[in-house]
Image 1 (cartoon, rainbow, N blue to C red):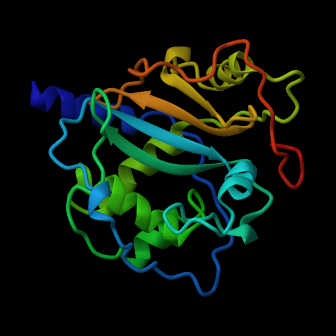
Image 2 (tube, helix red, strand yellow; image 1 turned 180 degrees about the vertical axis):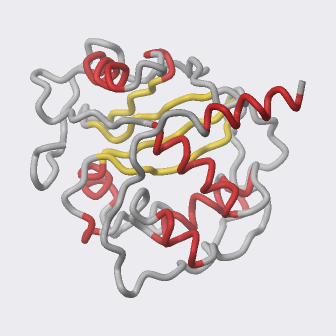
Image 3 (tube, rainbow, N blue to C red; image 1 turned 90 degrees about the vertical axis):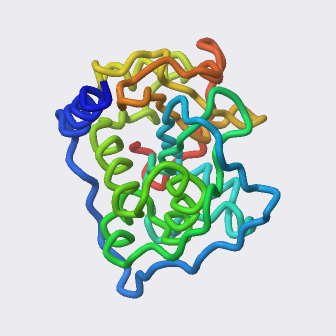
Amino acid sequence: MRLALLLFAALVLSGPAAAAPSCRLPSDLSPAPVEAVDPAEVQSGVTIAYYLLAISWTPDWRRINGQTKATTPPLDPERRPQGFALHGLWPNGKAPPYPRYCRPVGTIDAATVRSMYCRTPSAALLQHEWQAHGACAWETPAAYFRDAARLYDRVALPRIETIPDLTAGKLRQAFVAKNRWLPAEAIYVALDKEDRLTEVRLCYDLAYKPAGCPGGVGAGEARPVRLTPSATRRF
């Protein structure tokens, strides 16, 4: 059974994929230092029930987080204009508390930071994702980010700024239309208290097959979605 799951996961991760994102890397790009961890945030020993791929709407990421929260590293402001970007791949349990900071780890290697930067334009956020999530289910940063990249690159990101009267349901429909393999029940739409889009989160089972999100799909179908616009308003 274990071999069958591994083979299935390999098939999913090697399936049809959109082109990997490309960008100009900063000349001074280097790994971020190890993040200081509050012992109260450590949640180890949780059985993993599913995976979640978090894709941020970057204009609102910057609006909400800016340069203020050390525990929520900002995205590089030089990467504008940009709509969606990879936040991270999270191993989750059946219910909170979810696995987090499961073991002490070191700094990500420079090659991995460079290979992931066009997907996640923040060395600090990459370091945070490895420490907070990757270390709970993967042995090395390279293995963790390889899986995250393969899942993310397979997702064809829709242009959502031109959708009139955008709702959470229309947003899910836009993702399904571009990704026929992705069921609507596997798409969690995260909004803030002002109904602004913060993230789209895709749920997968332990073999990386899209699956219904155990905690529901977030915003209801008819809920209006507000967008903080990108620099070009073409995403």
